[in-house]
Length: 396
Image 1 (cartoon, rainbow, N blue to C red):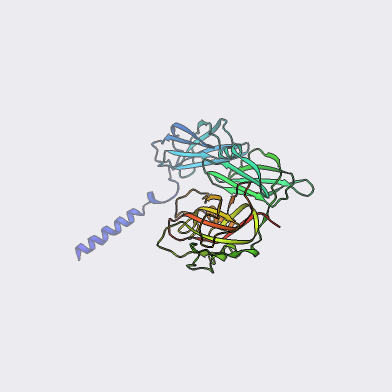
Image 2 (cartoon, rainbow, N blue to C red; image 1 turned 60 degrees about the vertical axis):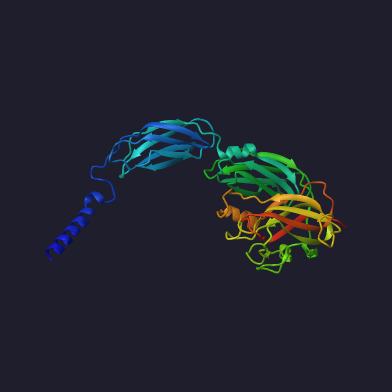
C-alpha cells in the first residue's frame, strides 16, 4: 500500500507541475520586445521574394512578421513562427524595388525595431499572363491562350460591345493552368471590339488590350438527326450506366449517369464507335464532356487521346478505306496534377464546361463520324463519356 501511495503522490506532483504558470498561454510577466532578426538574405521570385534571416537568441521571440506595401495604401504582411528562419512575401504587381520591414514579435505583440530589406520581384504572374496573351478569331467568337508559369490563381476579364456600342464584361475566366486557353463564343460573324485584362487575388490588374475581330460563322449541328450506326468491328456494347452510343448525344452531360460506357474487354485500346449525323456537315469544332464528378474525371476510362474520322459512304464491313482522318485531339488537364488528383477546376472544365477542340480548315462535309479513343487517362481497356457536341455548317 505504501508503494502505491508513493506512486499516486508522485503522479499528482508531476501533473501539478505540468500545470504550473510557465505553461499558461499568453504573455509572460516579463514580456518585452525581442531582439531584432539579423543577416537577412533575399531571393527574388515571380511577384515576390523569399527572405531568410538569423533568429535572435531571445526567449521572448514568438514569431517574425514582414510588413510591406503592394501599392499606395495597400499594406500586407507575412509571418513565420519563432522556429522558422524564413518567410515569403508575395503579391507585388511589378518588377521595381520594394521595401519590406521585418519585426521580431513577442507573445504579447511587442515588436522589435524593424530591419528593412529591399526586394526586386521577378515578373509577376499577372504581368506574364498579360504579356504572353494571344487573342484570335474563332468559330462564334475569340480564342485566347496565355502562359502562367507559376500556376497562380488568375482571372481574365473579357469585354465586348453591347447593342449601343458600350463595352461590358461578357465573361471572366478563372484559371491556375500553366498553359491557359479558353474561348468566348455566341457572336455573329460581324466585326466587333474585344478587350481583355488579367487580375490576381491581391487585386493587381494588368493593362487592357483591345482588338477588333470577326468571329467565324458556325451553328450547332442538330442532334435530333443523329442515329446509331454500329459497324461489325466497332465497340458499342454498353457495360452499364446508360442505353449505349446514343447517350453521346442525348443532351445529358452534367450527371454521372447516363453515359456511354463500353464493356471491359480482353483487347486493349483503341476502341471506336460510329455516328450517323443524318445530314452532311462541314465541322468547325466539338466539345467532349467527360463523365463528371471527381470519381470519374481524368481517371479510368476517361478519353485522353482521340481521333475523329469522317465518311459519306462507310463500308458495311467496318473497314477503314472509306474513312478520312478529320482531326486528332488530346485531353487537357488544367491543374497538371497526376492521375488520381483532381482540382475543382479540372472537374468543372472537363465534366461541366466540356473540353473543346477545333477541326482544321478546309475539311470536306461528311455525314458519318467514327470516334476512336486511342488512350484513356487510367490506361484501362474500356471507355466512358457523357456527351459530344459538334459545330459547323450543315449542308442543305
